[in-house]
Image 1 (cartoon, rainbow, N blue to C red):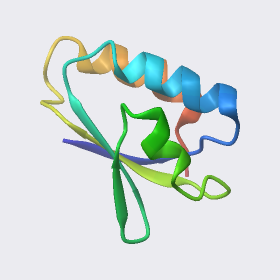
Image 2: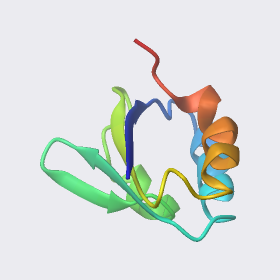
Image 3: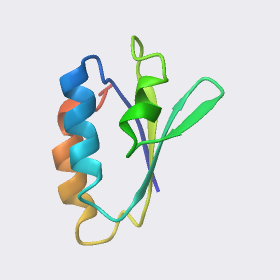
Length: 81
């Protein structure tokens, strides 16, 4: 499993994020406070407070062949410490 905060601060960012994660077989959850939504659902994401970073949880084996590619595509959204 992979967890990191992401920032989706525009409609374009949400659309790009959903397009990327839908290309992979992993379940993706976004957590904001006590809310958990499907990270592959545009409507679900827009129900969150997007003014602050949300926790992105990807349910998959980090040692799989395509996980590094997914994480590379998501890099623009990741909040680096």
